[in-house]
Length: 215
Image 1 (cartoon, rainbow, N blue to C red):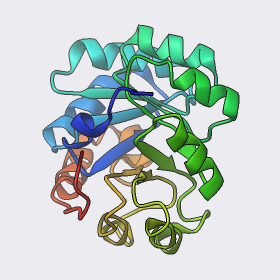
Image 2 (cartoon, one colour; image 1 turned 135 degrees about the vertical axis):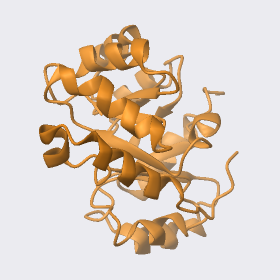
Image 3 (tube, rainbow, N blue to C red; image 1 turned 120 degrees about the vertical axis):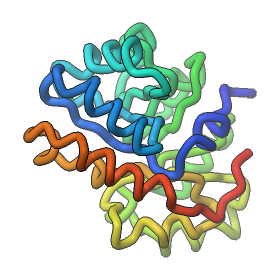
């Protein structure tokens, strides 16, 4: 099965900011700061009541933003996210039934997995890049190194527990095409309206090098 490829999107940046938006008024200035800092791929998690409205606002008002919906856990989330303007979808985990639903989405999907068996099942459905979550808790860099040999065709976007101290170790792996992280969007900076700090953190993250070949 040929599914929409995430590689053209992932070429834009090595880091995908994982964003939790509590106040709708923060959505647009936060997204602008990330784009200005060089991280246009933005994953807005569906963890708050304003998440879908935030996606809609960013999609319509922030030029250059490539918006994804994260914490997508059911089919209804897929439809609502696409209607709001999401250009890609990210799930924390993937049941067999939900994987089938995600495979029908008209946009790229990063389905979540935490085990070799889950990764193989998703690969069999045609997914090219998987979200490895929760990365640090599920084995981190050693896990990804260990499966690169038997599963060389699978690429990952690890998320969970990744920050400045370990991000380069992940991006140095040939099977890691990008990482997801919240360190570039600290909650205290968002609450304080300090979007300059977000822009500076994004700028630093945008210069990170990755070993993986995209596509």
